[in-house]
Length: 369
Image (cartoon, rainbow, N blue to C red):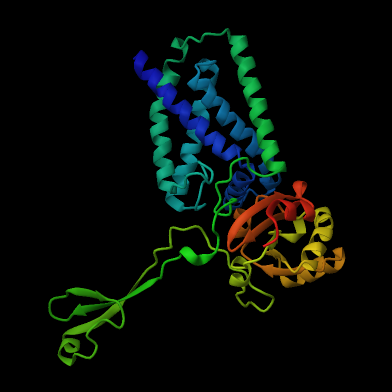
């Protein structure tokens, strides 16, 4: 039994440390997930508190993992762990059945698993937690209880500080497709295949063909088979959502931006009504110098055209605004607004609005194309 409860302690501890870290290193990403849950359950009044809840829950999860892994204050941790895991097990059960939120984000954006897999994962964790909870008094730590609590409080504060830093700047580890160094244009997409399905009138056998590679000109064959339907095979369906940029008239201009062989500066502001307006004024000198050197500088937003026009007029903004899906914009940079530099579809750099660089520093670092 001693071996069993220690194995359970170590496994659960490692899972909680990993889960807390990958969410805590990108707190804004988990804020978006929490907002989805509050909207799904109609608890809209709690949305303004998502950031504070995220920072607290991720730090608590990480500290629970540290407590279990290093055998610190197991008795107190067990009474926090069991109710917490029970609540999230019931939550993920409803999510698995009703699919209220497509992505629960239990491992942040580091590992994507389905709602059913999340629920099954929590069931396994519950099975591992029961021996820990049932034998909590038998765990003997190396430190005194007071020392253990002090260590855990210190870990909680340090992890909270790391989360605040990641929120006020950019995640220390970027798990997004738009991380620095990644290719973000569509050169790696594979062609979508369309199959037509025919069924034999006598035997009921079905056959699939890729048009026009089927015996449409064989009159004898066509009399024996009847068109049944079609099937689409998209090899890109497991890829992350692809950016689509539209101008004011709804035309797709994505390639002109992501395939630009020169410097392409992209200011991302997924919603203008909650963006940091001071950051827009701060970036104006940068924009003027980039345009003077012949480089493209655009802003991508999910706001409506009327909102865009009003925002430009109220704030004296001259650069071009284009539309894109807000969910995709949130995955591009964890800042509203945030600045991205790409060239030939490769992300060269990203900046939070608190860290906007000078134009001269960017040119000095990356050189002119």
